[in-house]
Amino acid sequence: MHMASANPSPQRPSSSLTGRRTLPRGSQALPREQVAADQKRRLLRAMIDAVGEKGYRATTISDLVGRAGVSRKTFYEHFENKQECLLATFDVIAADGRMRAVEAFRKAEPEGLQAAVEASIRALFEATIDNPSAARLNMVEIVAAGPAGIARRELAVEEYRRFVRSMLQQEAGDGTVPDAVVRAVVGGLSRILYSRVRHGRRAELRQLVPDLMRWVTCYRPVPASLVAADEREILAPRPQEALVKGGRAPGTLTSSSGGDLGLLRGMTNVLRSFALHSQRERIVDAVANLTASGGYADLTVEKIASEAAMSLQTFYEHFKSKEEALLFTYEVGHARGLALVERAYAAQTDWPRGVRAAIGALMQYLGSEPAFARLALLNMLIATPRTAVRANAGISEYLSVLEPGFEETSEHRKPPAITIEAIGGGLSELMYHCVMLDRVQDMPSVAKHATYVALAPFVGPEEAGKVASEPLDS
Image (cartoon, rainbow, N blue to C red; front, side, top):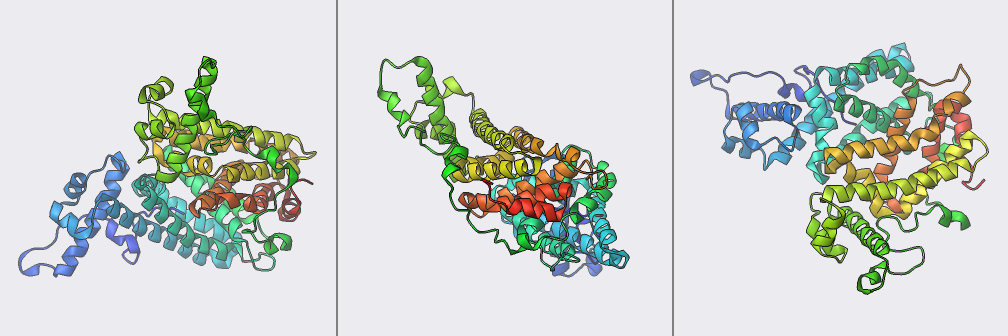
């Protein structure tokens, strides 16, 4: 969970990131260790300001030393490079944010669980509102650091997840809340924060606190059937599993007929349109595989052409750039996944089981397409601003199956409007976690808990647990 700090008190880990002061000179000079600590604080503060103003990629070491008032030599005495400085800044802000959330919860705990949860969320949101530059760094720009930034984000999520677990386990039936449910709650809160910070809508956060408190606490008590389930269990294959696989989707390098479309390269008397189709499929597979293995930063047009066994001229006949090829690859895989989800949803007789079937179809599809799953859930978010916008919009398109839930729910149980957006963040976090653990093929095993996360706000924990525990083909 990315939490921004605002004007922390002297006792907090990020007290070093506030204010600027001139160090005393002469006989009143500070000890060397204190001077070094102050220099580091100023560099971290400079990173927050620079990234908040121009973004991580555009920030240079010259920017940092200029803002901090130190020499380039001093910078390298503290950090090996710009990325290391960013990660250190992220750590301090995240630690302070967690401390604020915990302190607010404990202070309000005598008033009851709901009051304590609301106070904790409010403390987190107030910090984001008061210090937008720190919020941008921790929630938006950290992924620009690539794999190292993503890994650091995972550590922060894990730390905050422990705190959320302790909140949810109070009055949680038998006292246990599955890890997947806790992770989904953290993911939902993160998505709300991320979208408001990214689009300059921080002022909305205060108004959302009561509704998000209702959302967070709606998962209690967790049914015993769900608690007993092992979220790491890999679902057994079923005869109809082939119906929800993507066929020739990005990254498989196989066709539904088992043939090799690459053979068309050496054939003559082939329809021009079919040849163009073959070339695009090879480009799509090349982009998916190369991006999954090396990341977008390492992707080049030359590598794509080589992997697809074609000339650069042929590549440019289809796409203007590697970004355009990446976006097209995403659209191919996303369209197929969306079609499978809609088909699975429509085949069910009622809404809750339609949601269960839709989530199962999506998880099975992504599990069968690990290269595309990594591209869609990770690489699209960090490649370019344009791809990040498309990836986030794609998440919302899958969530359309949840909208009938408001009509299916009785008035006294009807959840707040923010619920679907929060659920989307939760489900994304569960799938993203599978990618980070290199367990994409195991993604179907998350379907049960993901279904519970999607349904509980609408039908209640008990009914959601019942539907989530049913076989997909029931």
